[in-house]
Length: 80
Ligand SMILES: [Zn+2]
Image (cartoon, rainbow, N blue to C red; front, top):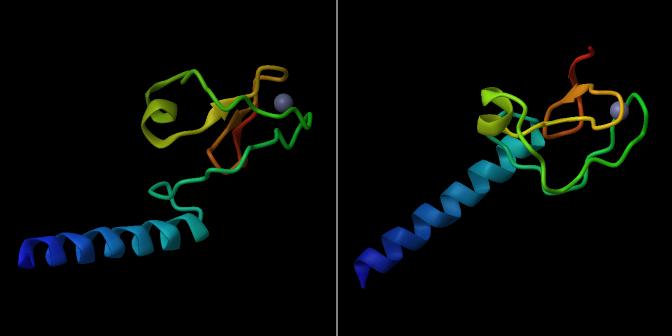
């Protein structure tokens, strides 16, 4: 029973931490909202094909229209 309690506290702590990280746009955070390309306003697909290791690891996407690299929060990483 005490193990269940410890496990629950760990899960809650993790969720609080993750929410906090997401607020600060940390690379550890998660963004569940759809991202729009700031350059051409294209809605980015939910299912993204990672272009490189960083995208696969940290999230982020490459705009299918203008090939701008975006992070998972929709901010431009670099423009081609
Ligand atoms: Zn774009």
